[in-house]
Image 1 (cartoon, rainbow, N blue to C red):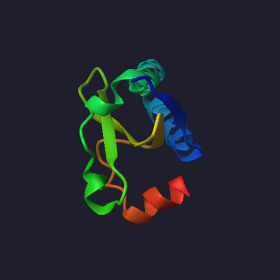
Image 2 (image 1 turned 45 degrees about the vertical axis):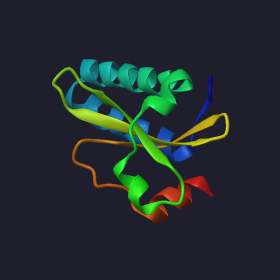
Image 3 (image 1 turned 135 degrees about the horizontal axis):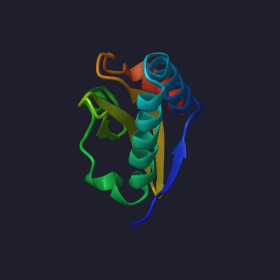
Image 4 (image 1 turned 90 degrees about the vertical axis):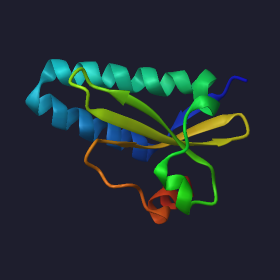
Length: 111
């Protein structure tokens, strides 16, 4: 099954914030990370059901999944998403040191 992938405003904000933070340290690294993030997100159109449940799934009424991607240095990032019918909704991007999202963080994004 092929899904339509939608990126929420919150996820776009996360993408920009993380990208800006990385750019201050390494412009090339930020570009590489941004490419990896978009490749992971774009891949959800065909691979969303194969992605593991996210930690956030434990405290949500919806099935919450994530796709992992990493930098050349091995730092793991993730795109958090839900599947609704034929739609994949990317709600957040999270860095390696960021906390697990609360139930209210998820619901605020999806309402």
